[in-house]
Image (cartoon, rainbow, N blue to C red; front, side, top):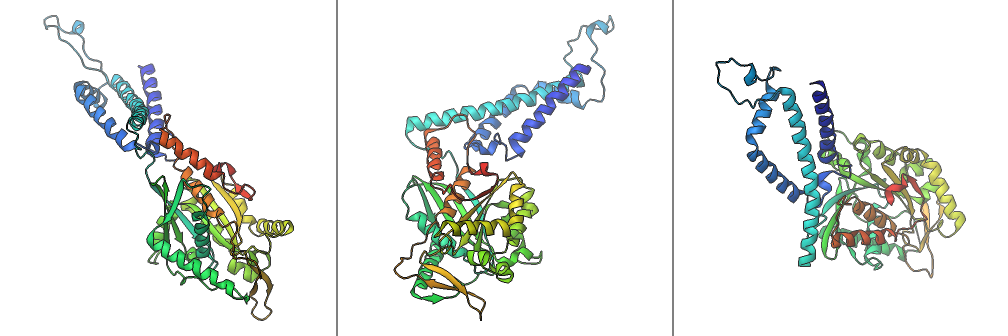
Length: 444
């Protein structure tokens, strides 16, 4: 029976690996919830298993009895029985045979599950072709994005300008990004206040566009393709002090829950502090410690999920005018964020993109006031208020988030194929000249 036991063990190991890949490891391409129709597939699969179990209930019961039996003694055959005893039909099986049978039953069930996924994909595709209607092949999901950075660094400004730029760009008209009502109100108010600063010829740091958040605040966007809801983006504005949040804090549990869900971090930092600022001003407005905290957080590192970090550098008008200025900006970032870059380069599940933006386009940093030690900005005459490159954070975030919806189905419906073709067009609108750190394959 040694060979039978060995064969049973091998099949059981195959069963365990398959079960893990199918039902317990989300990052694998065969994970069953990546199938757009997994609920319907599992319902049909469960019905078939129950039906087959009913048909072969006697055999299954006998198999389980054999496995639970304490005796390894093979059944007595009619030839070994007493001559006086009448011939008896024996159907009992040994425990070794029972274990072998169980391993085959589990293997058959897993193969059946895989076949069901393939068959359901074909059925839904045929129904779509016959009816001309779209079955929700990629169910709406919610992606959590964290906006991190020092207080009043301009996180709301970035979100307001990046949304406004994408909303008014019709190069990719298939995807429509719509802020929910409360988010629209906040961003519209922030965008209006942001443009009012251009009425001043000289001014120092911008005042917060909205009242500073002492707690986490969510800004929600719905993403549609041809009026069908595909994705919801939840941008969480995180107060800077949450790096030191204690377990006694009222939002500690919610903060940790959202951190565990986050797949995109948008780290907003000040270009003036990064390039011209002394250590005090740099730590205040462009500290890398915040990015290091989140990228080293066990809830992020141990999850093994794919993570994108967007380093959005605001107020770059002075440096983006010339090639030497652009070079200086990147060199300063590479130098002052060296520890963060090393974290990205050492983790295959992380990628980072450096995105310098012109927040207003018509306002430039000029010098540091010797008295206040604060930067002074000047409104450039005869230059319209035209923010530049502000669309890139949302384009990168949206492309990455939508890519996480990728289906591993062998058969793709026409509507699903349209979705992936449109996503490739969206990815083509990203600026390919930006500096990328970590695993750049995650952005393909």
